[in-house]
Figure 1 (cartoon, rainbow, N blue to C red):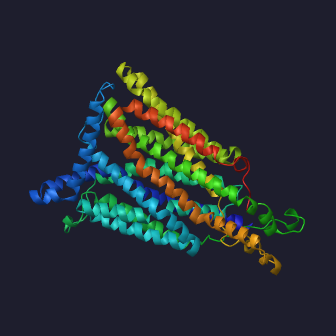
Figure 2: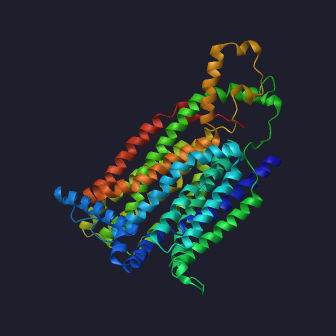
Figure 3: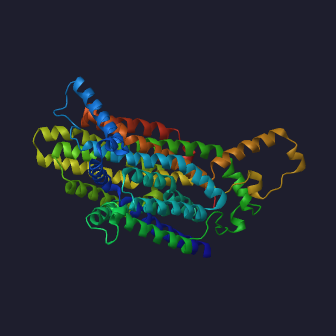
Length: 519
């Protein structure tokens, strides 16, 4: 069918554009500590009063105070850990770099619901292209950011503009049927795994190269070449989306034969008797999955952020060794996405796949909690086995949880934006309009339907996840530096286990066993 062919083409377009977008996003990630160190060097050349008043100096002082306060708590409680964790002064820079990542996530938490609503009103493509303009502006500011303040402005603009992941999810959900939606949405996770493996390496490579300009190089920062590469990727992506991506809001799927729908041959009436009757149930499921998404990322992002602290504190790992570990997680996650997760989503179900990933994360965190004891016993081989065993479980978690929860959330959403009766194309009878109880029931259901509009619902879902990402690194770092890695990772594992059981338990049983098919 033409619609089926068109759907596959749209999914391929979205996947290619998403790879470009995520490469542009991941290129600067490993550079933040280096950029902050470079800006600190630039600041040291300023006159003393100006240096003391600079934003970077004040933020580094705040990070230093925050870390030293936490370490003083650890000393006051007694050192049950065998060494002092987080004592390296470079962690001030790493912490500030993590805070910049949290700032980006906080901006995403604020803007995501608005982007979703706008895409429901004006269309996915228009809003996506508008966000691309903001991303391009962010890259232009970064190229010329010779001060830390301008770098921070670049991250603010980027955080308030990034909408590709959210809108890509909505677009794929628009053009796919319930039977193949999960498999198509798994491509978003594959794009993440590929880009989070390649992007940081590309960023490190281009950061080592000088910017090929001959005039007025003071206009550009030391890492302008990675910024320029990011800008080129975003320009290519924007041009590609403009010409290749159709508008998908209101995408029409092929209609099934009327005699296979119901006795009266009405697809719309089938929606009324089926999907519409489960509006309240789907809304409860969507909220429960959204809460689980946010809480999972709260704990998982904290574990991600502190992993490099752990490897340095226990093994004095170099950047190359940490890069090898993270690359292992990324490559394995991409392979799992392609060979295991995509078929499992349709066969097993999204929530079961996500639940397995959460269980894998709990195992990984438990292994990391035991790692200091293996180091103390001077068992290098055993320590490496435990570390890479935990990394393997984290790779499985990365491949499954967010993909599964996103696919589950998308399955609860609606494309339709009108009332129940209007959606079915059925004109209410005059006498029915006079019945207040019917009108009130319709109004309640209409309000619930508005919360299930695809762009709006996925925007709120992403917002909760980004809030977790914004808080997680600071929370985990605090526990890590006060109580040590054993308590930190054991606590994360325990909390994750409790919230996953509670959150999944709030999803109605019918919603877990059978998704209602709208298409």
